[in-house]
Length: 316
Image: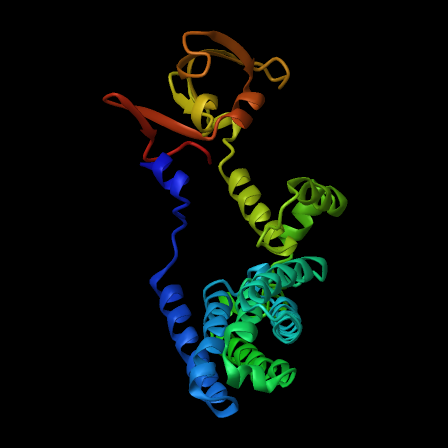
């Protein structure tokens, strides 16, 4: 089932009901305001097409408020640049099919180069071409009303609404300020991975990643801190115990401590083990107590044909 989810791209991240409800209510509030503004600026038929792109923006601002695609510059830049391109194509390319296709293609390229990728911008460019006579009659006024006006509305609603929830303040800059007091994770990262290394790693992906550098750093710090909490203290390892390295797939392994050779010198305080499951099964070996404790992530017990975490792990 996990493989099927992976193929289909089904996200298995757990999100609270409070987060889901907040996203839905925020989107409702923003679109209600935008509909009122759009119907005032242009006739209802054209407004419906224009609002569609803002509906997509609402999903980003209220469901993924900390995503890179949701930040103010991508929202403003993505929509405005796409609107200018769309109007230009509508005016200078007679064939609507080619005009619409070129508008969307140019909008994507422009957003990429100007670092303001915002998927709904493609719909904004498209609407300028296929929006009908009322939209065409607006000319470049379309960029200001309703597009710029709608952008201002949705960003203002995004800032005010998300500010009610400390964990999802928008834009990401405000969220970072609210989390500023927890400075320990940043210090943890700086001691292990440099900013230059992090930027280099992102450049090697060679594809747009919809997570800001700050959010990636925050996730790394949380994972690192959790990993450190799970490290076993050497003195709490017990002879006869079974321990797992907590890895996945072919790297997973379970070791059984069969004997020990205590010594006050940590370099000579040895543990003798046998691999009973996973990678290297049936092999035996020895290592220092300290090294074994770094390797071990969980104490496990046999449950019929499977292994599971022990209810009370001896990790101090």
